[in-house]
Length: 112
Image 1: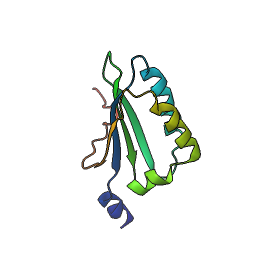
Image 2: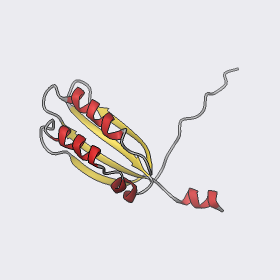
Image 3: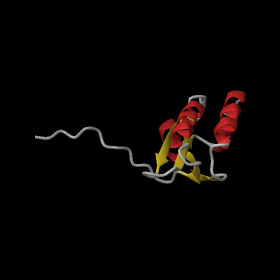
């Protein structure tokens, strides 16, 4: 029954879309990695996407539930957010999304 209940649960994604000041994406990328490394309980993975040849990006962080994200807000995390906030050209747009469908990559396919 546990497997069935796990099947019914779905993840949540926190998405931030923003633009950094010119030339600040690399510094922001390092701080993003530092912030993500503080996550523990309920954290399911993260991606940072960069639009080529720009300082625009999208951060996607996957969680078991919204409360898990809230419980991962520590003093260390707050300090990192404080460091990164001045790098934005303007505040990012943020939102939560239900992960409705997930397609894992297939395992290596044997070629005959």
